[in-house]
Image (tube, rainbow, N blue to C red; front, side):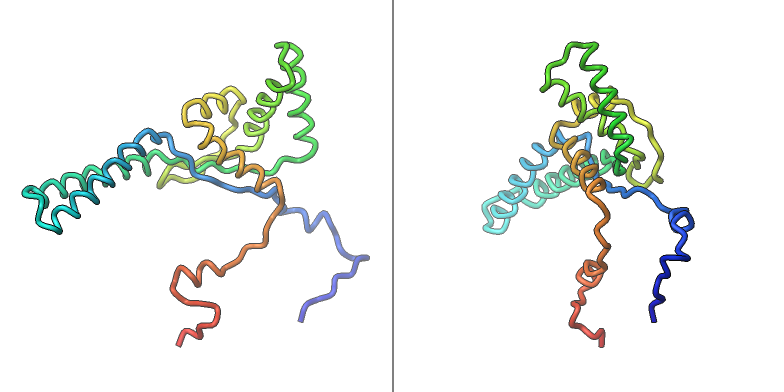
Length: 196
C-alpha cells in the first residue's frame, strides 16, 4: 500500500538532499575518416564472397581472409577512438550566466547576431559537458572551455559534435521515466511471455 503524503509534514529540503540535474550521454568518434575505407572494404568483401561462392575467384579464400582481417582491424580502431560524453541539464541561472558571457564576448569582438549564436552554442556545450569516458575506462569529470569545444567540433565534424548538442538538449528537456522493456527484448522474452 502506498503512503499518502502529508503536505504539512513533507520536508522538501530532506527530499532534495540527493537530487541531481538530469544527464544524458552520447558516443563520439575521432577516427571517422576510416568509415570510407570500411565501406569500400565491405563492398569488396561482399563481391569477393559472391565470386568465391560462384567459383569465379581463384584466390577467393585468401583474399577474403585478408579483406575481413583489415575490416576487423579498422572497425576496432574506430571503436577504440570513441569517447562517451556526459551532458547535464543547465539551470536557468547558469544559462543566464552563459548568455551574459557570450554577450560580453560578442560586444568585445564585434560579433554579429549569427556569429554570437555560434559562440553561444560553444559556451552552452562547455557548460553542459560534465564528464567523459574512453572505452573501458571509468567516467572522469571535465571542465571544458568554449575554446576546447570549438577545437573538438573542428576535429570530429559538426555531425559528431551534433550528438553532444543533442545529448545536452535531451538532458535539459527533463527526465523520461526509465523503462526496462528493452531488457526483455534483448533477452528474447516479450511482455506476454511467462518465462516457462
